[in-house]
Length: 237
Image (cartoon, rainbow, N blue to C red; front, side, top):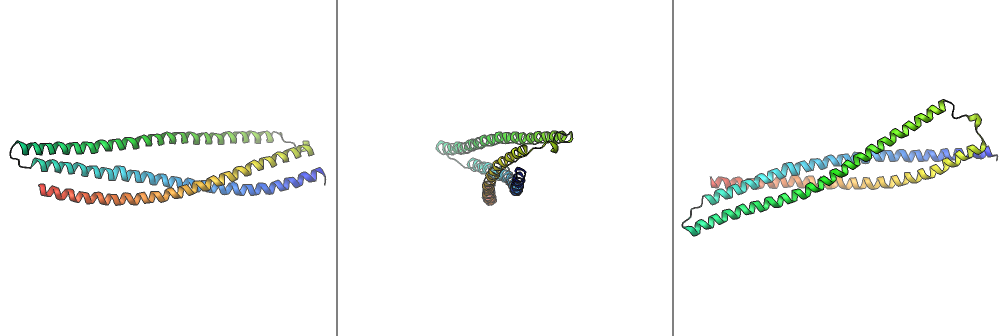
């Protein structure tokens, strides 16, 4: 077999490998879009749960707390006392009620601060992710610019088949073969990482749905508390 025939056979083999790599790359591309879709869906569900828990349930529960201690103050204020001992008892109970409320409020402040610190850290990570996305976009722009320039060079006659040699063709083929090996390894690594991300996203989705159910159950409990608060208010009135 001549050198040209050897090159021809190698080119045909490379073309078959490239076809297989292309199929795997496009499959990975579909998985990438699937994972992004799941991640975005989870992100929106996270924000929905956050809003329902923090802006909804939390505010309802806090309103209940305010009314509970308002009822407490009204109950204590309406108590009849006879002498300093009884008056001091009611006043001490009033102070205790205030301290109970303030201790509760202070503990909630601590929990909100801890959560806020974590959210601030997450926001910093999101800022960094945005910068990575912008860098990836720039790499696309740079790649496209290089390929446009290459096309322009080809149109200007930079590639001349008449100047080709057997040795030059063999070097190009060898370079293509090496590039395919690196590319195949990267495609396999991408597939493994993608499957892990998809599994994590599916697990997150299940946890978020469970959280949503818990949020709904807690809202029911909060409204049950409110019934008791209103019943007490009617007794006071």
